[in-house]
Amino acid sequence: MKNLNAKKALPYALLLVVALVAPIFLHTSYWVGILIMVLYRVVGSVSLRTISLSGALTFAHGAFIAVGAYCGGILARNLSLPPVITILAGGLFAMLVSVLTGLPFVRLKGMYYSMASMFLGVTINYIIKALKITGGYHGLTRIPKLLQSDIACYYVFLAITVILLLILYRFEFSRIGTTLRALAQSQDVASSIGINATFYRLLAVGMGSFCAGIAGAAYGLYSTVLSPTNYDMTFSLWLLMYMLIGGEDYFIGPIIGAIIFVLIPELGRGLSAYAPFLTGICTLIVAYLLPGGLAGIPALIRNRREQKAKEAANEGRDQNASA
Image (cartoon, rainbow, N blue to C red; front, side):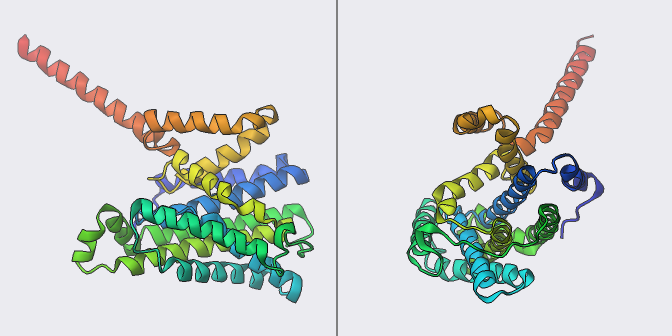
C-alpha cells in the first residue's frame, strides 16, 4: 500500500481539526445540520470517485445512497433495531443491489456504461416512489433519530466519515486500486494479462456503494425523514460535480469540492439563487485553467516554479556560452 506520509497527511489532519472544532463556533441546529450535510456529501463524492477508478463513470450513485438510506430507515422505524445494525444493513443492502443490478451493465464501456447507469438510477428512484413500504411519493417519515443531541449526531457522523474515508483510501492505494487504474488505461491490455475486468469493476462498484449506503443510512437516521426527490438524478450530478471540480485525480479532490460547494451558498445566502451559474463558471475555469481541479493547484504552482527555474538556468548557460 502507498503510505500516507506526514506531508501528504497534513491536509487531511488540518481538515479533521477544523471539523472537530467547527461545532464550537457553528453550534446552532441549522449549522450543525449543514456540517453533517457536508460530511454526507463528502462520503458520497469520494465513494463515487472510487467507482470511477476503473474508468466507469456512473450516474446511479445517488440511487444507491437512497437504497442504503431507505433500508436503514425502514429497519429502524418498523423493527426498532439499533443504529449500528441499521446503518451497516443500509451499506450492505446498497452494495448488494449495486452488484446485482450492475452485473448486466459492467461489461459496457465509456458512454454506454454511463447511459445504462443513468437508466438504472432513474428506475431505482421510480421503484422507491412506487413501493408502499418506502412511503411512495410522500417519503418515509417518523424514523427514530440517531441521537437526541444534534452535536452528538455530528460527532458520530464525523467518526463514520473518517472510518469510511480510511477504508476507501486503503482500497484505492492497494493492489486492487492499481488494477482498477490499469483497467481505466486499457481494459483490453489488462484483460490480455489475465485481469478479470468484470470482477474488479463490480468490486469497485460494491465498495463504493457500501460506503455510500452507510452514509445514506446514517443521514436518514439524523434527518428522520426521507424523500425520493432528494435522490434524483440532480443529486448524482452534484456528487459528480464535486469530484470533477475538486480534482478527480486526487483523493482529497472530492472532499474539497463537496466542502466548497455546500458551504459557500450557505455562507453567502444572497448567492444561493445563483448557485447553478456559479457552478457553471467554476466548471469552465477548472476545465480551461485547472485541468487537475482545485486539488491540483499546488502541483500546478510547483510545476510553474520548476519550469521558470529551468528557463532561468538555461538562460544563464546561454549567457556564459556567449561570453
